[in-house]
Image 1 (cartoon, rainbow, N blue to C red):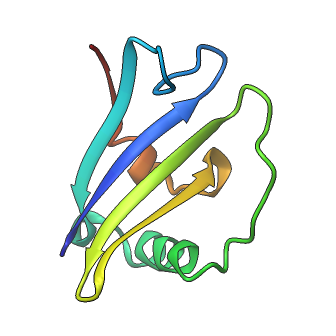
Image 2 (image 1 turned 45 degrees about the vertical axis):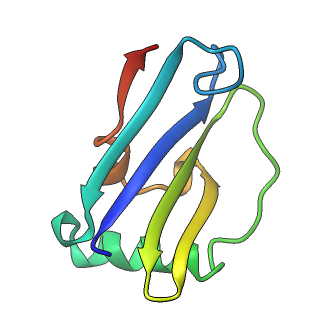
Length: 94
């Protein structure tokens, strides 16, 4: 329950979308995050990040975590994601 999975989708090339040959994914332990980054992620999961319409050609991040009550997934625009999480994502060809 200490790990999160991250997936980046969208952008000009449509990474991670159906038909894409590039997937952008990462995984990291929550304990690797600074207290400020951890608080930012908790706020996003609590819905305090606010909903925003998608930006054309903008990246979105799908972040998944497991909790005692089950799996939770959110999708947020790139500018709301802490740098440490963005840096954990790597592109792979499939």
